[in-house]
Length: 123
Image (tube, rainbow, N blue to C red; front, top):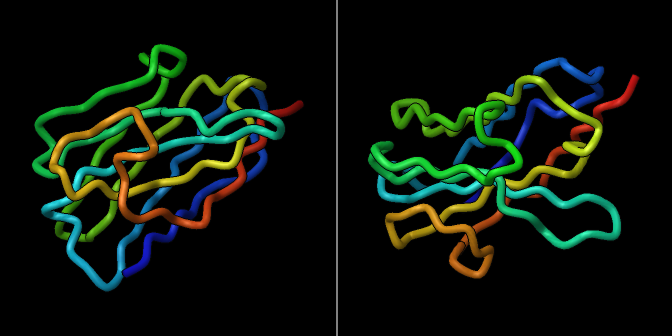
């Protein structure tokens, strides 16, 4: 059972990135997925989550209207489209899988985690 994030990198303020979270060893169809981020010296922070069926989506206030979470269960992948990026979005981004079926802002609700991908927003 593995989650692998990809798509991170260096981007200028105002730019965009799309992160991917690919699952191997299990099907994502029955799992809710959350995206979290952690900046140096800070606690892990909730970013967004999507229900297993895709019909319930939640965003943190700090990213609402800028980030979009989506999933393609046929590809066993969840995406995080990040637009209008700001310097304060700089962090390691993690995806996590929750067997409970509903997205949840607490990291303790998640059963599996990826290794993270670095996003740096800087000019």
